[in-house]
Length: 426
Ligand SMILES: *[C@@H]1O[C@H](CO)[C@@H](O)[C@H](O)[C@H]1NC(C)=O
Image (cartoon, rainbow, N blue to C red; front, side, top):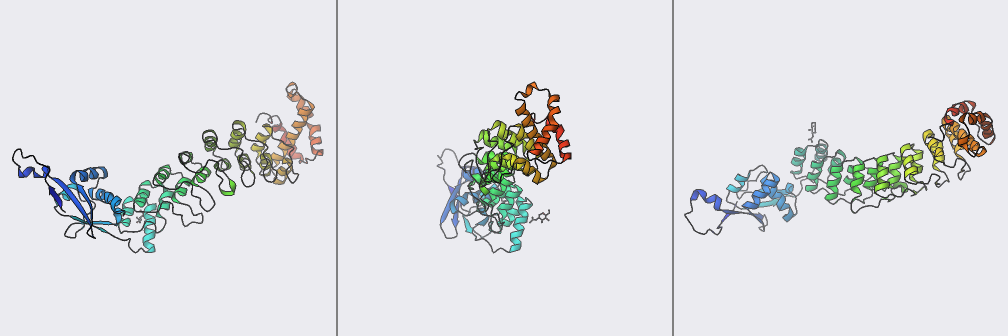
């Protein structure tokens, strides 16, 4: 290479001893493109610094040239004047010892067979940085196949970084029916380091996959609080952005029962607890039908959610808990003063939903709840009534509840009795 010998402005004091010559040289490395255009000149000091930061001087130089010629290092070949190639593992001394220009040749991506595409995918899944590096050096187009998607699923940060360096498109939709980008996949799988890398590399946080979900929706459904936290920093989709079926991140976190996320979304990120999805359901409705007791407890007790919110069919969270046979939820909602007599748009009560669902525990509990309500009405100051007295009133009241429309099986009534006194404490 023409590590050009330049006079450093030697002042002439003392004799120049040939053995000290290398120390006094300011070496420049000129890189010429094959077209004959000069691309770069790199001084010895710059080269040494690059090499120190990167570890490998030739790789460092190619990374530097990447910014100038806009082609990744995998497609660059640096040649000595005799046409032989500089290998990436050449050390600094070898590089500095030559006295020639370097020539840069830019290669187009090679023809790629489907086997080679699969091989890249497999090397990515193996999380093998060396294999991926070697494949990219063919040079192989990293956008053939779904290598970056695989890296996002596996959480292979180093491999993802290599692929992006090689020019993989950051926001490419995958081949799967959901059309998810690497950021969707890394978010859904909770790989925070890859998520952070992709966002810093320019991935679009508001991208919708085919079901209309952003990466934030997927992180919420899958309970990855650290990813949720990160995605909400800076610009991005709004906290109440409706996703599939109009479900917001809070709906999804509530439906899947991730209490930490629900708390974070409401308390730190200001998510709206009253928001309705396409079926007019609130997060409480979804937590109820999915049996997420802790989430409901938080939403109702701490976040002020409406316990009797109505969905598109006029159903409350209690209707849904009963229809899905969620005993604990029904018990909690009744204790929290949900309206147990409320009729939905088909004039069905919670008890009727419980009966059609066929969970005897829920049915008998609701019968008890009705009884309890009547006892409370008969004795407006329940604290004054001893529990044994109330228990003594049970049987007639049960019958009246039965007359009033509830038709519990006798066995269901028996199982109901022990839960009676818990109603107010749940
Ligand atoms: C992936 O790992 C397997 C098992 O270690 C190995 O046999 C295979 O060659 C690797 N594939 C690639 C493409 O590196």
